[in-house]
Length: 569
Image (tube, rainbow, N blue to C red; front, side, top):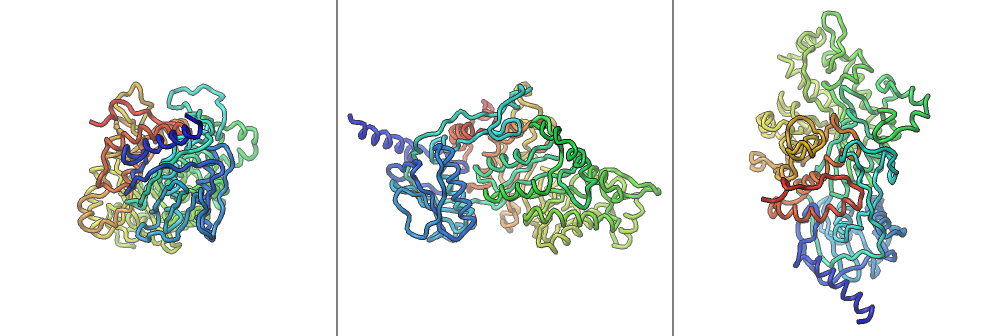
């Protein structure tokens, strides 16, 4: 048998093995509709990535795809604009003849023997079509360097103390080509908000680590990263008008040697400059990930009060510096809104999260200013005073064309028109959420029962790194999340914007550790947020996931290897 015939047969066998008729491609999240074709398309260093000219965001989508292919093939591939019909052997991203019903993130992907066309009404859909194309290819399509000790592609200098702290350093080498089976896919997400939360206020992560976290999210069609920037322990964002909020700023500026010694396990500082945060936003925007900043108020505010003690309550003539700001003082609103003014210049997100959870209100009942405020506004108790604070901040953000988001405690005083409530207290907040939904409250579903990724993934404590508390959230448990409650499904399903999982930082001691806690549960979350409920099954997901893990290895993603507890029943 001659070499040419052998090559043809080899490609045919690969294509046959990957055809939908034989085995469903291991695409995560599961697409809406897949139709098998015959044959395969070869992506080589000569393959052109083209996009219709005139749209910078479409250029970003094409550029990202070209960049991933460059890493896989070991040769530079650039994206180029085109106003003509796609040339044979090219990959084209275009809005031309795209189905508008697919919405802002939907796409159609056609892989033929002579080329690939991704059609999408909006650039985000074209981006996700490119992600699906990468998943149709062998795992080498995900090839990328890992984040090691705070450096992308860095080297280990210390022995990690625990297995979960060990970075997943990829061994994948560039390949000469990527074989993609011929297929037609039509796909769109179920929900518009598909998010994760990360918490540098408890354990600080560098901007480069946050960027890497964003990149891994994009590979799973997750589009919202909430960053918990402030809490009792720390205030992370630089506020130029309030330098006292980042007291280590001057010390670090005077000690460049200390900064140079910063590693993933021992950060030299615990704040972000506005320039750094803007660079993160720009990085995420090119990957169609929205950065949602969270500035905790009125509770979880000890770090804020250390820098702005004048915003504390006054009890018996004494200024208190506890965990919550004073909602009675006008000065509190002036300073907080001034801080937000600076941050709105950094974060273009429509959504601004203020937390508003777990506020003890312990000083409010005794505070002279709070009492005056309650009397002046006709507020009967401190729960309603909390609602007044949230409502006032929401109205302020609305004047800036932004939308306030808060945890479900904001609903204890009733629905908040124009705001978004984030459901987290499984069981405890159900009545508040149901009542608020009857009054038109928009919601993001993030219940502790399924979505708290700081909880361990197995009851086997000997093999699991330390998590928060005693709760267990298995891979299956995350996958079983149904974001749409029956009481909302029957009235107005549009009220549920989507889903989010939260990785609180108290126990997270290294970047590989937070990846270990995030993956593969984030894969399950992505399917809960993207894929239609009809046709979803844990057994099917698990089978695809086992193949998908090879992609995570190629991308340098640390993850927990599924065990017997994760097998389908």
